[in-house]
Image (cartoon, rainbow, N blue to C red):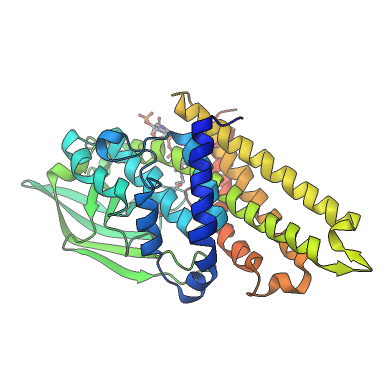
Length: 375
Ligand SMILES: CC(C)(COP(=O)(O)OP(=O)(O)OC[C@H]1O[C@@H](n2cnc3c(N)ncnc32)[C@H](O)[C@@H]1OP(=O)(O)O)[C@@H](O)C(=O)NCCC(=O)NCCSC(=O)CCS(=O)O
């Protein structure tokens, strides 16, 4: 897949920003568990947080392929920033764009596209991960408000974000067709961050358990029709999975580049270790796997840009890229030897950050289920 001149320019802008503004502070933010608020504001100013939003709503409207290329670059500079960007763009902005009323689009998209607001997506519950329709959160209509009660788990930007798309059951007898989506500003009374999870990687993102107790959401913030929520969730996760594939490629590439550069510098047995065939072949395999994953991601993105079905292709891209990325990051550590295991070198952090790509927005086995259903 060859990017157009414009897509290359957008990718290069993201690459320069990620190298100059994100990568230098990534280790410190990881160590200090610091949310990248200033960095996100800069990303908003550059148009990187509104890439899937049309200009009329304040976005840069670059399309999914340019978005995937840019997201790879952001991920190569800083995995956590790419997670926030991916969730914000694919599963917070796009649902409003696709299913929102004109009033909802006017009210929320400009703030999201500029980065003034960061968005999230709350489908998962403590008992409902892969079986996403098994929701217990309830929403009942009371006058001109819905009243929401329940809990959500693993919600990116649940604390530091300003708006979350929330899924809850409005008709318990209707199964998957009883789920409804809502746009919930996080300052809504009754929205509570119960805890921010401690986790293996992505330390500068907030991954939250959220509780809603008698949370009153105005009826005009219902997204789509009553009962349409599950379809909205799955349709947007399809796009989200392309983004996570791109993130995985970017983090794998960063680990690969660190290993390649280290192999050029480090000597053993009288020569740079890259001149040893074992190391050179390992690097060649890593580069090949990264390129293969990138092409799967770009292919799914191009299908989506052309309005073509890409359910399986999005799952294939996420599955292959995320599993590839763990192998490549592990190989990158191996090439660094003992130093690769130490926090002084970036591969240790990237290895921790990339692991989640096989889990969130659908585990590898969920992707296999989706692919297998469509064989
Ligand atoms: C494992 C699953 C894929 C199983 O799905 P289901 O069997 O429950 O769903 P279906 O019955 O097939 O579909 C229901 C309904 O939706 C329509 N649909 C499905 N996919 C699409 C699509 N891509 N585009 C449009 N519409 C779609 C389908 O046609 C059906 O409609 P009708 O009944 O025909 O009208 C699924 O459960 C699954 O994906 N599980 C994983 C969930 C997951 O990824 N969770 C993570 C959420 S992320 C989060 O909450 C916070 C973390 S974060 O990222 O911050």
